[in-house]
Image (cartoon, rainbow, N blue to C red; front, side, top):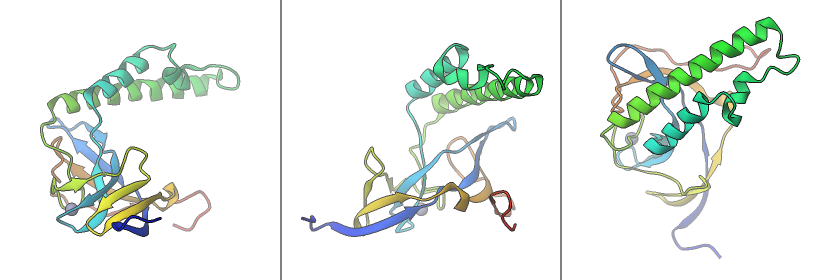
Length: 182
Ligand SMILES: [Zn+2]
């Protein structure tokens, strides 16, 4: 039986790509978007995911340990990944991953503002339950359906570490699968 506030509505969520936090000195890390309801937009939107500092420190510690399961994605040199080309590429990706994880820990340590709506900047946002399956919105309870990656829009939007959009002329572009028309 459906509860009175359960709308039975299903919402497809497309995560926005190409969103970055930009530090004062110019370095950037990806913003992690997550489904949210924004009271100001009165709509289902992309909100900021702000993980706990502990979880980000754990991630960094795992990456710094080359024998961890997390790191073996980069350090595994079983054939065919023992070829010099693969090894050089993996080494670079591994260094990048550690660098990004370090920046993300720094960002989280300093972040003071609550999570915001990535469209309007309001902090009046609510998030789905832990399984990301349902969420309470201004319209009532809705079911959240994660949509595919290939339909994601690439925004090229920049935000301060506190989650405020940096005004800058950008043009969204789109991801395409190989062979698709641009
Ligand atoms: Zn909003």
